[in-house]
Image (cartoon, rainbow, N blue to C red; front, side, top):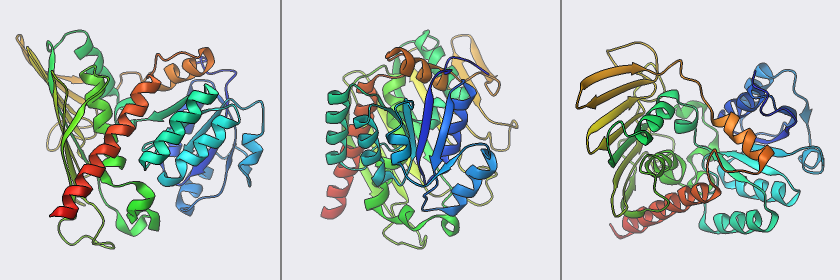
Length: 345
């Protein structure tokens, strides 16, 4: 176990999504101490899973116990998405940094309030973009691109298919007012990757679309497909996200990322190489020397280590605050543009 997080104490407020398991475990693995979690949840299955995985952690009835504890440095949150901003704001006003599951916010008004409070308090508002931060193949690809393995990046193509699993989802999962829309929710991952791989601090949303296709239940208004085209003066990015992973797929989604450069390309099959190699984290590189497959499954992850160091040292080595807010801003812009176009169609 790494000791970089030793001395950091965190509390958990918001256990409505299973991503909370990764956030807790990642911080424990780098030496941080969990002071407990608020047991309120909209999904009893998530609570049961947390109790099974982390039986040693104290369960608390009220968030104030954590917010008012001066010994707690950090609040970790995977609440219903529409509730995350208010939890984060309360935490920052109590002098604590915040690490939330994506999406960090679901409206432009929430983003503005979070930005204002972060600036006022000097506290950190960070988001774990799990499809980059806890996928070894993506971490390795980013290092390769930054080292010049494929020349200058030109375009990213990110695909984030998911299995719907409608029967086990809580009600809020199908309400856009609660999760923000498919582009705010899922596509925040691909927007984050576009900015990271092209080393961009801003981008323009030139196209976005959302829709409901087929006859998925229980809500025919639920957005089960979305796409975005992003651009900077030197880069292009395409994003496709959906809820159409078939039941025959042995994982929740065939998440893929392609990065095109001036002298090569990289393809990542994050979770499965269908009808091919076993396991996860497959990276394929094509360059002037030929083609090769790189198994990244054993590559170490450094997100939680870097994040803990940033909390302790007040630095931005893991991810800048500006990057976090820019991903939120672009996701909200894409969702808004898609909804306007949908209303006119």
